[in-house]
Length: 368
Image 1 (cartoon, rainbow, N blue to C red):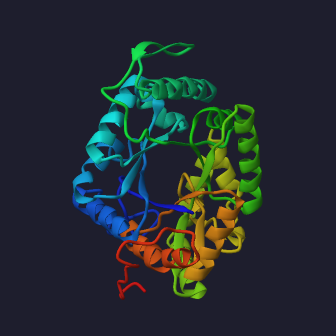
Image 2: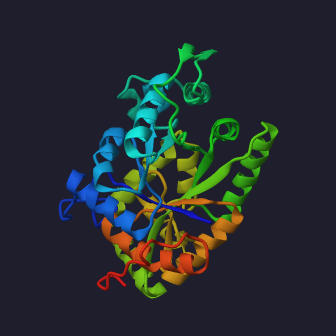
């Protein structure tokens, strides 16, 4: 069974990947975020990923504002372990679980560009941050154990860490990173390892490596993948939308992003750039997998593009490689949630890859 998730654009939303003066951008207000959350709950998505960083609203606060307007939807809250003590993070997560009725998933984000980290006074190199993350997760889990937990390591010296009560359920930990250090942290500590969208051959090799590392540590691990989505009734309609997105990107914006990507310390970001290398003639890297968004956008730059059936086929193909969880997004996130939720998800349900939707599949005829 597939876990299907969507994205909450707490940095704002738009019809274009890069909003400009001619674009009507949507502020991440509680009202707009509520529309997305309620739509995703009605469409049957499992959770919303909420990003972290100074370009976004705070993930903890933004998602708690949406708990009262939803009843089932979970929230995958991203945060950086360098900015919190592990016991405080455990307390926040434990409180969240009780107040939400168990609707928290935790996404730990170690990597970031140095310019972003410097805003928080963080100067540690990447390898050090991953070492710190490993200790952080151990202490956080220990604080959730129901017994006082003490730990003395390179970065933390904690005595009798605990929370008010054991969170129910204990939040699963999601984590991504393409470097060797990130894969080691994932294999030894987390519940679900996230990859950004690449070709099946590229991600299959990563799954096999991380699974082997986890086995060496005596663990098993789940896998998830992050894609954008552009899906319509026919392949031609979907590719026409992709073409319009590409046409909205100026050569200056593409070049500016290319310069940033060439300087990045992120292995995952370099891999996303290398999918196309800035060459506009090489954007379809695999059938229905388009890397055009990554010409200008940091983070995941790949989209599944095609008819409802084509995109469903690709999702099943990636699921068969070993991906249990998918985190999708699109521009704008409210409308694209409907295109995907009303077009692709019913096909996946019919084929037995998604649980049945309470009350039957939603149909909004302006979209289907």
